[in-house]
Image 1 (spheres, rainbow, N blue to C red):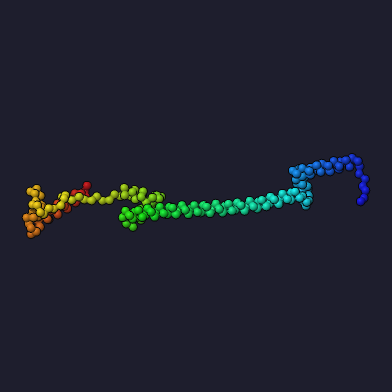
Image 2 (cartoon, one colour; image 1 turned 60 degrees about the vertical axis):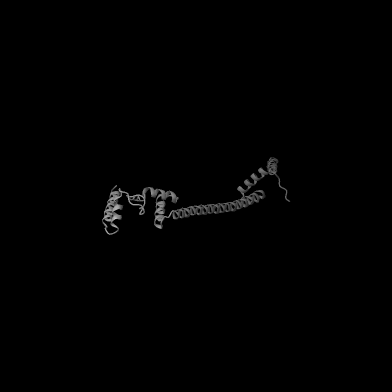
Amino acid sequence: MAVIEVDEAEFASLKRVRDTVAKIATTPEAKKLLQKAHKLVDPNAVTPDLDADEAKVKETTEWQKKFEELESKIAAKDAEREKNESLAALNSKFEAGRAALREQRYTKEGIDAVEKFMQERGLPDHEVAAAYLEKQNPPQEVMNPRAFGSFNFIEPPKDDDAFLKALLDSKGDDDSAVIKAAVDAVGDLRGNERR
């Protein structure tokens, strides 16, 4: 090895730098900073601690990425399952509502009308929609007959029932009592429709 002459001041300065670098290399955090500084000025420099840390970070990042992908797949499956369960429950409720209307003797056209109303108004309940439609479109009133009760052909008629007396007296030969009763009934019907 060749001997080189170095000035004493320069030698002392180089020794100080060497001792400082050696001291820095004994502290792990400082050693990494020194290796970073070396990598900045010489990108091809070998830095074992930094390279090991980068490999760990890379591996951790890859595992983190895989974990996040798996987590998102599980969340998507859970969301899909919940959606399907919710749709199945809603469909079950819908079919139960339709069956309830059938039990109440609604016709197919009536059920279709209720479901059309449900769709227009965004109602999920057949019972509520049917009740509203019935309230808005009440059934026609049943007309009550003028006479109440039944005919009793065993006992003779009372004096105040002129129709029955005229009917029994004619013995079926004369239709005038029946025609008069029919005219009165039609008159009653027309009177009820005008109300």
